[in-house]
Amino acid sequence: MAISDNLRGTLYMNLSMFAFTANDTIVKVVTSTVPLYQTIALRGAVAVLGLLIVAAMTRSFTLAIPPRDRWLIGLRSLADVAATIFFLSALMRMPIANLSAVMQATPLAVTLGAALYFKDKVGWRRMAAIFIGFMGVMLIIRPGSDGFDFWAIMGLCAVAAVVVRDLAVRPLGNAVPSMMVALGAGVAVMLMGAIGAAFQGWNAISLREAALIGSAGIMLIIGYICAVTAMRVGDVGVVAPFRYTSLLWAIVLGWVAFGTLPDHYAVIGSGIVVATGLYTLLRERKLSRAKAAAA
Image 1 (cartoon, rainbow, N blue to C red):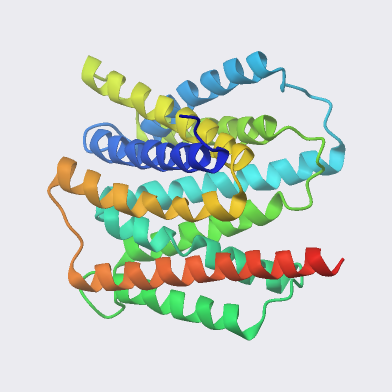
Image 2 (image 1 turned 135 degrees about the vertical axis):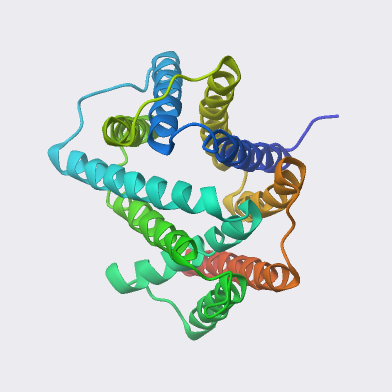
């Protein structure tokens, strides 16, 4: 029986979310014995090498990028560096499911950022959904409770950095291959890890640690390729909601690897964030269809 494009797209998106979450889980395990910046540098080297191979195979490697787009790629790469530092610093101290739930607010924050910076029209329904979604995030991290600390703030900073990263590529020219954007970010993150390791220290690693770091880099490559493939083979409105399966993978892998499960506040907050995110996505899809029909 033939598999429809949308079904293939959802399968690729699920695999992508599993790969990204597996990467996070592996990094959390490795950084318990290997310095953070050394882990970032070594994982980045594996990821960059893999992306270079994929770029060569797909003939998408090019240095012929207009100066304006180079600046945008540079800005995106710097934002990716900041997001990596904030996210992995928080990941070392927070339960992976809780941090993943906080990161699910990113699409809502991107919508709000686009409205503020690019003057995108966002109606009262989506603004209400964004507000409710952020209340869900507050329920997860609970300001004033023992669970709200410096690392929870780092998680929120990671969301802000990802918003800058995603908005930076919006004016990017269509002729710039996505692979070059990913490579730019990969190289920047790898160099940041190497510079940080020079100050933090560099330890000899065991064969097990090397295998785990290599696996994390491979998972990053798989996640990226599957995410791009998913959006190309399936309808965006069908495929995009399956990004939220990363939260389910975070709960499962957090329980398997660390024996942790989110408490009832985090579960309720996660449900609110996912529900409002899905509503915003479906609302945008409906408005896009109405606009296309009126054209």
